[in-house]
Amino acid sequence: MAINKIFLGPLNKNNPILVQVLGICSALAVTAQLKPAIVMAISVTIVTACSNFIISLMRKTIPPRIRIIIQLMVIATLVILVDQFLKAFVYDVSKQLSVFVGLIITNCILMGRLESFAMQQPPIPSFFDGIANGIGYGIILAVLGFLRELFGSGTLWGYAIIPQSFYDCGYVNNGLMILPPMALIIVGVMIGIQRYINKDLQEK
Amino acid sequence: MKNFSNTYIYIYASALVVVIALVLSICATRLQPFQIENKNQEKMQGILKTSHSDKIMTDNITSNYQKYITKELTIDKNGIITDEYQNGKCIKGDSNNRAFKLNVKAEMSCLTEGKNGKLGIFVYQDEHCTKYIIPIYGKGLWGPIWGNIAIAEDGSTIVGAYFNHQGETPGLGAEIANEEFQNQFIGKTLFEQGGSWKGIVISKMPATAMPEAAHEVDAISGGTITSKGVETMINSCLNYYQPFLKTLQNGN
Image (cartoon, each protein chain N blue to C red):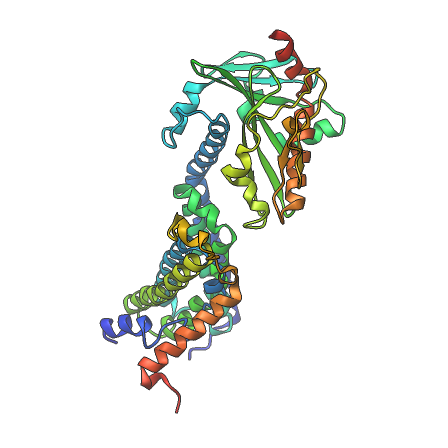
């Protein structure tokens, strides 16, 4: 498989959240603000790429009957390593993410890509498939985090954006934006927009 | 697909477990010094923040701490200083009882059970004033809450407060970590004019008229249980420091 085809797919036509519909739970949980959303996206990209690479290296040796368990062990180990590194080197960010880093283990994108790509393809393409899916996931998370923080709290990355004059005129932060259901609605709207633009994604 | 034998499966799984255990333990031991240093920096920063000094910048935490926190005292429940740590050296008692190393949660539970407990005090000193910073620990709605209270040389006036939490509700109980809530405590007094203990009241409708207003602070709307938790934490922890605070008052 050509490297650029592997790379471009997850960014649009095969986007993990909008098309494969994976990783929805974390997309709703960490996007109330932009900063944790970006850090989560980076963490998922690193873990997906590395687990894809490692499982692809091992793919010919893994007994099929325990392959899900083996995949889970590799993912869990990588996530624990990421968590320990965050705690050691970017402590304030790790406190913001707290339990959500551990929840990367349950993110369906990782298992999904391992099963459908890494178990069949060689290591280097698998690595790039992991990076691409991570970036595709990250783009959606960034958009969600941007919209939810801006309209739900009036800030971006912690800095106040909406000027005080708006609040004085009667503008109120949209509290629904901070809650997960609104994130799901936004994802639905994004799926609709993407299918309108890319007619070939629509089912016949 | 090649048929893997049962023996292969058992050996494969066991070998993988051993490899993973090795990788994780090596990683944990190598990274632990960094993680402990981060936790210590956070603790120092909390103490420095409580002092509300205009001199403290957010970087150079360790050097600021060594410069402005000149003494660490450990007292018992009768107000007697049992250990003193100054300029990086223990000049009285046991260096293991250093205030920075005390586990506030453990000492508080010893004291509530009636046993002996150690109480830590951090003494902040610059050219204008001396402040006594006391660590506190308590229970919020969903988990523990903790913080520091800075008291002036008169042993009664609060000059700074810092609170933090583990999992209080964002926007509600979590507001205790905001400066707006913490700054309310500045200027409030723990003892009445006559010298008797009053403590702090956190209420939905705090008194605006003196003398009650000197002891009351506004609670957080929608964060009733966390606010009550902060009130209980301040009063029950600082209660053990009464003998020490009284010696400060008599000293003036």
